[in-house]
Structure formats: C-alpha cells, structure tokens
Image (cartoon, rainbow, N blue to C red; front, side, top):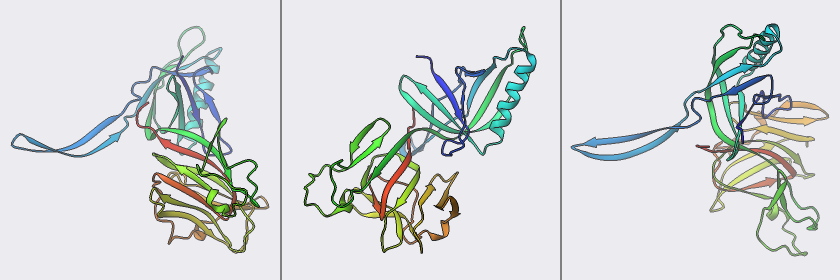
Length: 294
C-alpha cells in the first residue's frame, strides 16, 4: 500500500481539522527519518565496559512538500494557507499509515523552504521539517460504563473502535451486588496520556473520578474531584503539553484544577494494572499508547 500522511491541527479537540497530505492539493513524500536514535551510557575502564541506562530519542522529520494547484496563484495560496494554519497551532499531529497500522506523532514546525514556482502551473517543491514532541503512539477510543441495579444483560464491555473486550474475566451471578467490582479497565503497557469525558452518577458523596491500581492492586494515583454539586460531566486531558480539568454544567465549562484531590493525584505516569471508576456512570476515553518504532 502507499504510505498515507495526514495532519491533525488539534487531535484531542472538538475543533480538530484533518489535512490529507497524500491525496490532497498539498502532499508530503520522501520522509528523511521516521526512525529512532538510542543513546546508552557505557562506563569503560581498562578495556572493561559497564552498561548504564539506554534512552530512546527521535530525530527531526523532513519531508518533500509539493503543491498541486491549477496555476501559480493557486499554488501560492495553497502553501501560504498550509504554513499559516500549522503556525497558528501550539503543535500539530502527523498521522502515518503503513502496512503496520496507523500511528501518530506530535510535532512542531521547524523549517519550510520557499523557492519559485516551476512548470506550467507554477508548482512549489519544497522541504519541510518538524521537531518531534511525542513519537510514535497509537490513538485508541474507548467507551465503558458500570452496571446499574444488578442489570448484567449487556455484560461489562469496553468498546474499542468496532470491537469490544471484556473488562473482567470473573463469572457474573444474577445475585451479584458488588457493582463497583465491574467498573474497571485493564491497563496494559505504554499508556502515557488520555483525554476523557466522565459522567457522574447520583451519589451522596460528591467525589467523582478515576483511581489507578498497579498489578498488586495498590493505588498509586487517582484523579478525584471534590465538588459541592454534581456537574453534567467532567472533561480532562492528562497530556502535559495540553493539560486541563473542567466541569461542564448547562453548557458552561469551568476550570476545576483546584478541585482535584492532590493527596491522591501523585503522578501522570500510568502503570500496568487497572483503572477504577469512582461515582461515575460512564467514561469515554481517547488513549495514547507509546510505540517506539514503526
């Protein structure tokens, strides 16, 4: 298959615009380096070496950029609007699809050349470079909810794109009354951030959020909000480059960072284990999972 490139102006936002850079009027091709660089600390003395830590970094990405307007004026307009749109963002996200799947990288425009339009239509053929912020990761959409009133007719499922997986391998009995036991999501390796919409349940305790347990079922961090009133929903983004915590009530969004329980909110690094719902009816999440090499 032909490798596909797209740019998202705001991958996590409702105002995201997707620019097709494979089939559109502006196209990227001939990437210079989509790989990795490893740096290992090695201490040597008298011909003997001792390994230290190894760090993985990602070099800047360079592409050839070509415009396909009908005339010189249209090509000027295409390249100017494209560059202006990228510059207007804090950063953008490159979507890369190959035989291996679809992967994402958050990047910042570093350089774009500007020469003269050539040929009958005044096409531009330039070089564009991006500095890497996060590279690479998958982007998974999950929706799940807890049981209500011991209704197990639909079982407990997490929907991930077009398929689902069960969140708990235990048998379900019709007399089961431990509803919270099924309000869990199994976290596997390399999850580094997520965007979520939390729908609070009706509860006398005005604490809403999610808690994270390691493989030994020990809580190591939680995102819990202490509130006087129940909002319609809570929306949050744990990405350190675009972090926010908000409640929405009657269409009005309010910054609720101060309502976080900081005695429980100890880290943004997510371990292998489980996530549990706390006084929530449902959660919709977009998960970012790190992939070093694609």
